[in-house]
Image 1 (cartoon, rainbow, N blue to C red):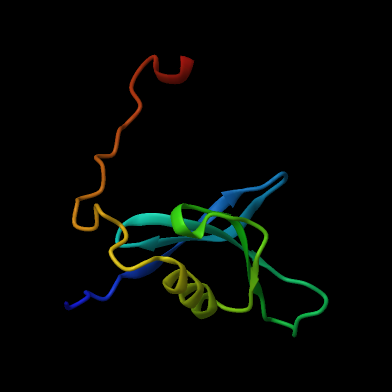
Image 2: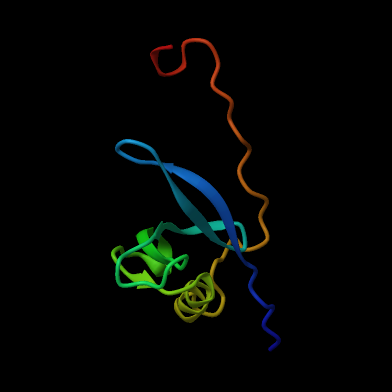
Amino acid sequence: MHLVERCVAFEPVWLAGQYDGEAAQLAYVDNHLMAVLIRVEGEDQQPGSHAWYLENGFGPCRGEGTLFPTLAAVETWIRDRAPAGWPATRWRSPPARIEPGPGVFGL
């Protein structure tokens, strides 16, 4: 049996914070949202360096609160958790984007 290499991809986004936007990354496996990560900087890190905090994980990566030193470490973690044959909907196209119209959400 030949296993196809999974596509793990990251998308930089701004996550709404209490007072400002926070730099974040959405992590995908074969077009499935797997995790939301927030960039963190702290006193215990070298100047100019940062780490990634798992705000929320989904599917086989369900969880929160894990700290990763790099996005490469996140990718390894994701690949280790997504079992062979996951997801069953691997080759489906993403769902269609729905644009809000008049009256949606009380607007």
